[in-house]
Length: 137
Image 1 (spheres, rainbow, N blue to C red):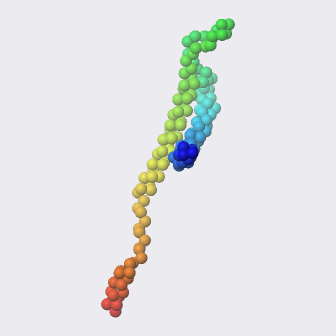
Image 2 (image 1 turned 120 degrees about the horizontal axis):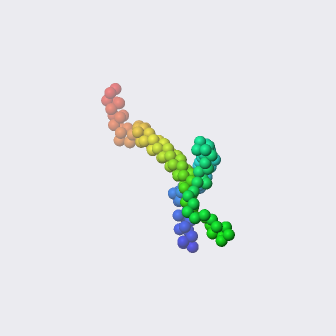
Image 3 (image 1 turned 180 degrees about the vertical axis):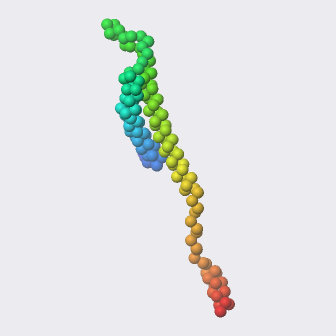
């Protein structure tokens, strides 16, 4: 029973939950960037290069032999180019996020702390103020 309680405490810590949310959002963001590269960025580049589909670019080392059921052996460098572009886009987005967070932290640190509220004088201070005021009169 103690192990279940320990696991529950571990799983409910803020860092673990934050990490889980980050992984889920990161996965979704990766799909968005993949679609951006495959569906929006690469088609115009393919058009400019004469209709080349980068995802299909490869160097065939050994052609497939369907009669003997031998699969093709190829280096698929076009897919690598797509994934490299995706990585650069994701890395740039993460850079922008970290940069903006660091800028916000720097602004918070630079802001001066508000002045402390005047504290209620102690009974000794009150007595001394009353003596001072009576002497002034």
